[in-house]
Each structure stands twice: as structure tokens, then as C-alpha cells.
Image (cartoon, rainbow, N blue to C red; front, side, top):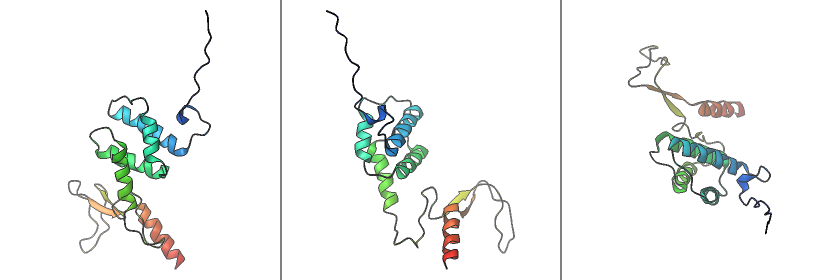
Length: 152
């Protein structure tokens, strides 16, 4: 008896473009990157676990957390690893919109550089020592300072 079966209906939001949220796309892209970086294969259902764990999070913040994890993570990330980075970022002291908020790629508005020239103080402008480096203001701080100055 020949029976023709209908193809199964997709039950994962990531299998269709319709109804796919930006968070789903961020997760799919970063889980794919993770599998390539750490040379692992995702287990069936892993995307659903990540979707549930990251539900309600900002896609931009999830993207940032994966980027941060990929810089230092020695093993494939678990949802708890990414969630911890997000929580740490969210718990950074903030009082209101007038207070500076770091972008997440700097340390409170400062970034370390290993080339270029110093601004110059008593000793004048000098090349940055590539072994030691120097710090400079991050663009996020410069934009905040300019907006604050314009509002004054």
C-alpha cells in the first residue's frame, strides 16, 4: 500500500522567516558562530533552550554578551554564561539618563590603546609604548559629553 505523507510542519520559529524575532535571529547567528569557533555541533532542541533562557532580553544586549564571551571563553557558552554577562552589564550603577552609561566595549568610558601618540602633558606628546599601552576616551563617552555640553 503506497501512502504519501505530507511534509512535517515546522515547529521552530527559526525555520521560517515569518514571525522570526530579532532576538531569534541574534541567537541563531551567534549559536552558529559558536559552533564554528568551538568546532561543536548543536544538539537538537538547543535553540529552543536558548530562546527560553534569553526571552525578554534585548537582542542588542544578547549580541554584546556573545561578543564579550567569544573574547575570553574557552568552552562553548551555556545560557547561564551569557545571562551572567547581561546581568553584570545591567547591574552597572545608573541613576538617570544624565549619568554616563558605558557602551559595554569599554571600561567606564576608557579603552586601552597600544599605538599612536599621547595627548601630552608636562612631558609633551610622545609615542605610546606598545608594551604598556595607554588609555583614551571611548567614543560612547565623547558622544555623551558632547550631548551633555549641548544641553547645558
